[in-house]
Amino acid sequence: MLSLNLPAFDIKIAQKEGKNIIFDVLRRRYVALTPEEWVRQHFVHFLIAQKGYPPALMANEVQIKLNGTVKRCDTVLYRRNLTPRMIIEYKAPDIPINQSVFNQITRYNMVMRVDYLIVSNGIKHYCCRMNYEQNTYAFLSDIPEYNAL
Image (cartoon, rainbow, N blue to C red; front, side):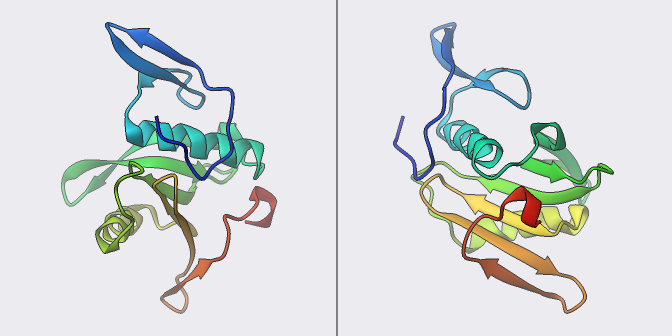
């Protein structure tokens, strides 16, 4: 797998039926090792180990209903009262972060209405803070520490 712009971690990879699988610390099980999953696992470990995000308040592959169809948010961070606080969308490292990626996460946010949106392909990461009172958003220069949210 490709080297990412994220810190290394103790990666647990195995094989099942001739295919690589990786341990998902949030789902507590092995999942198919795709390029997007490679990014997700690195980013989740980065948030936990480097930014202090509590794993108990995070979930991967969160289902939502959007215009009558079921969609999945890649990762959601919740508040202690279990309302959603942040949506994170991952792409494979070779997928550029463009307007269509932001459109996708914005559609998810129409349902979730979170404070923060993050998109990452493992190489580039973008985080914005939503301001619903002024109907605006602001891109942040870095991913915030959990205690600063």
